[in-house]
Length: 188
Ligand SMILES: [Zn+2]
Image (tube, rainbow, N blue to C red; front, side, top):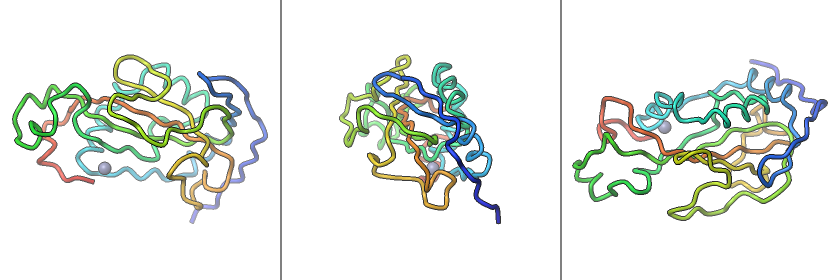
């Protein structure tokens, strides 16, 4: 059993992103990701996300993750919310017709980073045409959130569990890149 790393929050780096002021500890965040064991869900929707991921995250988002010390392949979670806005909606989906290979699929996900953010709190509710605060291109947006504002939090035994941390929440409209149609794959 691995020993939990000692995270000191010693080397804080302060900068601003959109409306948020960030105090990040990239060295400790990297250490926490190295100590963690990312468990990736193997349901069809998550498999599609992992398969498409290299085309999903804009460069500016990857730059931010690198600056924060976040491992861009270690999302805490991604969840799929059906065909993205503007696509044929559930009637088509459930009847298995329409050009589903051309649809994009709405996913929400989050990463953790050690440090603190101050600024607007996380959104409690998203409406149909909402995106997160910072938009990068037509299919991707994100925002930062203090962990106390979220419905979910990392478990206590996670390297992020008992330390000051914040979330990077993302919303992405992702193409279906698997050969198998979504309804022939198991749901998570
Ligand atoms: Zn899954």
